[in-house]
Length: 145
Image (cartoon, rainbow, N blue to C red):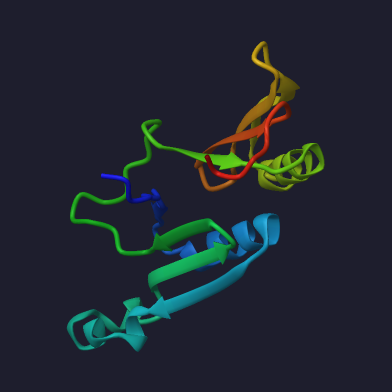
């Protein structure tokens, strides 16, 4: 099996998907697209108050793909620490700028610093409760391989 695979992160929100995804676009750049429940065939089956909720959002910037939705399951939104967003940056400037932007209104768990293995690494929890790991491998090309 020599086909390339890619994992995309899909975040679930509780009514603030548009706000959160717009924040991520400000931090990471790229093109952001939304589909509301009201714009979908589900509109007739859902309560009127849900028509403005986001059914699906996609932020794309090169190979970066971040998706989100306001569609919460029957058990409700349950935040945990089992998922982190790992952002591989292409320069020292980029990792520092992304860290600063994403940490705004959140928690700076570990500032960007040089690791024992020669990379820059930092982690934070953003204002929406999502955990981010930011990485820049200073000693090798960052081409996805």
